[in-house]
Image (cartoon, rainbow, N blue to C red; front, side, top):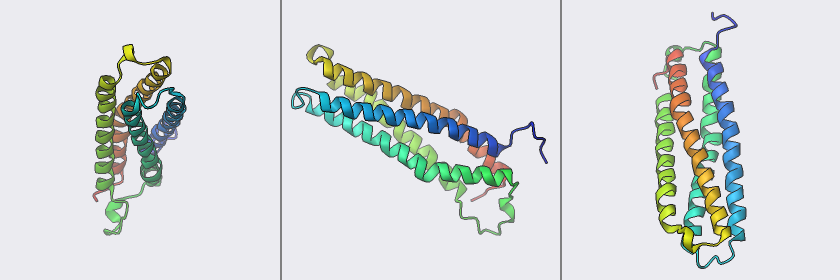
Amino acid sequence: MQENTEKTYGTELIDVVQLLNNEYRGLEQLCANINEHVDRVINKDAFADYIHYVNYFTQEVRDFIKGRRVAYVPYIMELAEKNDMEHNCAQCSGNCDMQHLERLFELNKTIEKMLSASEYASTELAIIYDKELVKEDVQVLNSEVLRTNALLRKILKQEVLDLIPKVKEAQRSINARN
């Protein structure tokens, strides 16, 4: 049994998830800001391609957040609970339905997808966006897109450096094999 002063893998996971949930809320707010700024663009026809790509990017970000909340946060919380209860998947007789390796694979896959979306936002939107040709409302919109992309990259880095290793440790701790 572990001492009270020492954090368990489950507790560490919960801490990371809570931190990330706060970041997800910030990302949602930035997406909402982008929608407001899209509505304010004066000559939407002149910037139709740019607005289309901005809307696509923000939808990708929203889908990412929804996926985290619907699929991954519940799994991680259950994994944390199993760790705190000192569960041993080796004794589950193959009845474990948590699909640990699949969840880890899918988590990594969604990170790669969002890195690709982020890279797209950094390059393609920059090509379409020409500061000399745009009005102030589009400049403000672009600024929000850049802020959103920066926060997204920060979150993805946290997931890679903090979340994934802690999920692996927690899985190993409960002898998860499937």
